[in-house]
Length: 330
Image (cartoon, rainbow, N blue to C red; front, side, top):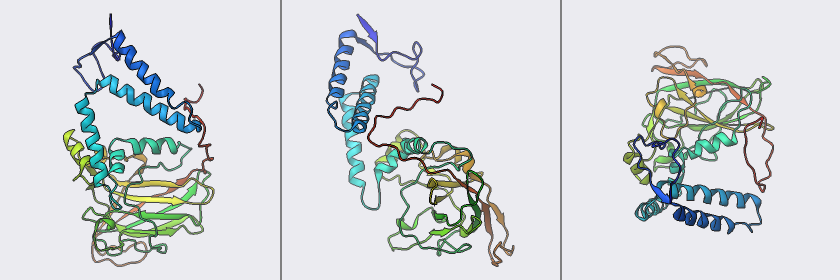
């Protein structure tokens, strides 16, 4: 006697495959596979940490289900090991291929979604990215964070407030971005610091600074993750964006971007970081147009506004408990 394994969602239909080949697996074979999974799960039963036990057993369940559903071949598993090994070989103190892999699989964004639960009108979070650097220079409100980075000058202003609508004075605002050539300062070999800085909101929660108008760029795609994207017909491009990390005492630290409305890559971000609420208008002004701070520019420049809302600090969860999420009301 045999059974379809795994059971089809609909007869003859599998997710992502319009013309599947359903594999019949005998009850004996299915029983052997299930017995192995149970044995591996039981091997973690004595873990002292409930959280570690949960994580390892959930990982085993999902990994075994993947192997069984796809009828993974030994050759395919060998290729997977080779791929992960290549990710490790190319990773160093300047490049983290496993972050790229997490990003292009959407795992980074899903983790961010889980850890930044929607709260009233708090600004949405998105991917941190691999190019943040501690110890950025401080600038005053209205200062220039470009530090000579090539690109169109761009004036960015806004306010920081909490979900009660009150201004947040003294919020630390970290900002960083790629230059007009699509590169971050850490991607150069000359030790420059450019297109990154931090500043603090004033007593009314306001902030403003000069940067450069963001431009699209590809994530590093000369390694195994790039080859994976090419193999599945996906672009490595990210839409134009400017990074923010905003923190204040008693409030949730926000890591987010703003994106340029109209960018051609908004619907195909290689790391799935775009959210509609983060798409902003960037208005382009001709040379000679007076700047908000009175600066006279003999070149064209852009301006945008981004108001930030910080949610309350999340209560620290007990990291050593077995946690299961269920929809509210259940």
